[in-house]
Image 1 (spheres, rainbow, N blue to C red):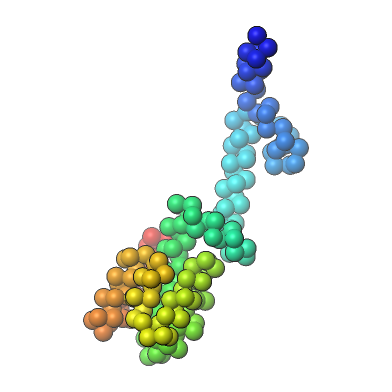
Image 2 (tube, rainbow, N blue to C red):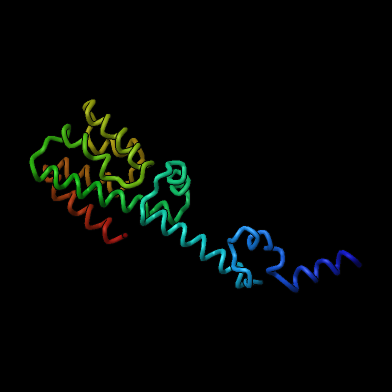
Length: 171
């Protein structure tokens, strides 16, 4: 009988068991029930938005976000657009790929992707093709396919501009 009373009390006031969030200032003092949960959700969404738009400085946070399905795609699309733009500018300026490889990791905003791009650039310096190096470190298959098509056709700059437009449209 006491268990049933406790359960109905808990269900009657859904925000009551979120007292600890109010205690530490994560919820307004008047937030109860679904309003409290909605407030918490808004705080979490605002924090994610700040991390994605203002740039993340803590590398483990970036690695964790790379595992979240919706966020992962956004981060890859943003990085691919930036890398394609930088590569297109460098190749249009007739800068060798070996020299361009020094600057490419800076084009990826996310540190986790920047590390992968750095590994790909090391492979490029060792004599691998750009598309093979990008494929080995896990770049999206569409991006790798466009780079490979550009390498094989001799029109890498044009292919990179197509990749840039494609990934910019997705962001």
